[in-house]
Image (cartoon, rainbow, N blue to C red; front, side):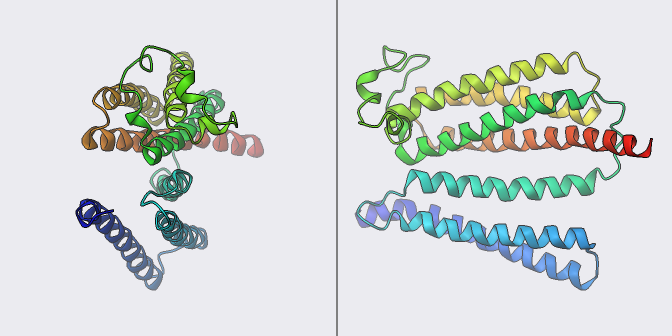
Length: 277
């Protein structure tokens, strides 16, 4: 890597690390402030300490990822990149869930049929996580540059000559750029199918306002994300579209957690009602 090439990535890396350090500072100062003022319940204290551990682990994983690019080539392992990304999403997931518990501690969701959406939403969430992981693979392998066409990859739906090039069948879809792009495209359709099923079910059920908002956010979010993915491919992954595509994935992840939380609220309140009766 030349000095000019290094300069082109230095500020991205520097800002990324600086934001990480700032987040840790905000957390530690906030934690100390509320602890001194005795604002924590025992449950909240344990949750805050858990988030602290997750945040520290994220920093360690970040260094582990960077270290993989300090060997022969200045490219980090796409596996470690995916782990770093998902650990960040995990930190956010728990933070957001704990925040929602403070925002909606006594929300009345007993009149909702939302529990009937729980399994479908969970399936969508799992598929979405797999898709986000493959998004990290695409970024790490620069797989978005292989085929800039849609809906076909070039002139074929499945170009074997560029996908099936490894002896291991599985590695073709984990480590070969064209294979990774094929998986990312395919799982995108699966996300849309899961969303269509969720949408169809939701129209037949009585939901709370928060649950309806969650479903609506996912419907619009997945539609926007799907279009962003197509545009990112067609324009050969410009930075702006790539960042927007990744950001939209984050908001979809957030919307899914929001819906899962509110559906879980219905389940918990129904269970509590049974115990009382």
